Length: 295
Image 1 (cartoon, rainbow, N blue to C red):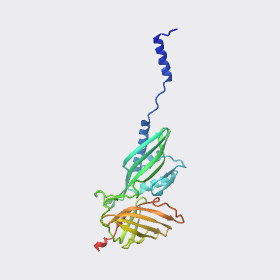
Image 2: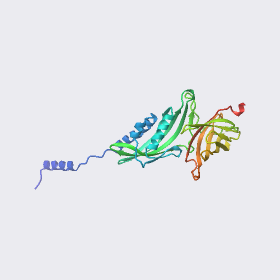
Image 3: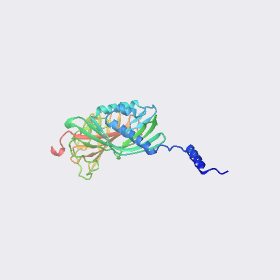
Image 4: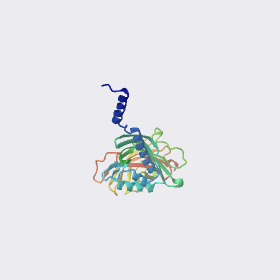
């Protein structure tokens, strides 16, 4: 028996409607929410808004994350403590993002990011602006409809982890560490130097001889210069007061009044198998005495 055409069309429409499944929400929309969360975290950090950061970060006790200087965080309490200390140390923060890419699969998301971590220290004419060029990766999970940062890892974008520093707020843009590296070296390193460990905002003084050797006021420490060429300054340090030692690498400015670069551990107590350059931080050195040529 032949079924009328109209009835067949109606049957096809009913069957098609029963079989139709709504399309899944597009990954592009999911990733927009994911990217918004990452940017919100960075903005909360720049604004020193710890409660906002806390809401967007997991507090699971077994989560592990890594920061610059070899710092390892397990769980939330230690990270929260260090974030509070950082916010108290700096006058202001700025974290401009130069590149951010995000991906997701189901309720798991991840990202890669490049940004500058700008720390403004002090007030008034003596204010210092330190720029740490960073790269960061992280993993997020969507919980109850909200993306939450689980774990992250950050490191310096350049191999040495060097920083750019603006001593005066209205000064001209600072030279990068790599600029003008072929300029003649300043051979006399003697004098008194003010030293800033940028990440921890620690300050102490060193009194060096012409060859760049001498004591400094941190745990009875002493610097020993092993090589100086084309403004590249390398050497080692020892701190008997807390039984530690390591190495450093700096680049002296063209006028010889400041140096910037990195330091790292080679031994802590009986632990000697520390990978070079993996655990340490960044330096800013400034001369406190006139240049030797001016004496």
